[in-house]
Image 1: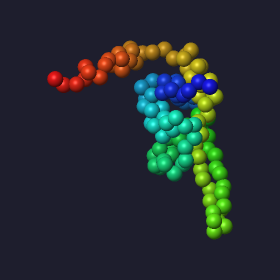
Image 2: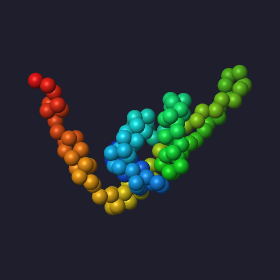
Image 3: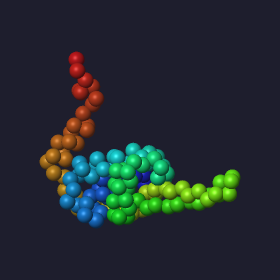
Image 4: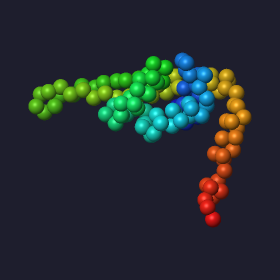
Length: 127
């Protein structure tokens, strides 16, 4: 299966419900924030999220890009313990990203930002 890259997630965010009026750079920042939690995993535990991060995740759940899951386990003393997870909807993200690639037309600002991304790090260091 194809991995979820930053550009893939950003395109999916833009094309998802109410997202297409968002700039690619804003969607990219949102995608980076989300991917920083997931890393190479498709699932994370809810406890790592701060309230404002959880709000973003709920927004992504409304767009069907993330989904929640819960697991129950019995502790040694007999109590039930619930663990909540967030899971990436990989198939939907890839599908929306493909649609976004067909619909998205880069702006001049996006092209300029891409030039900066391509520049080597040495150019940014002071002499």
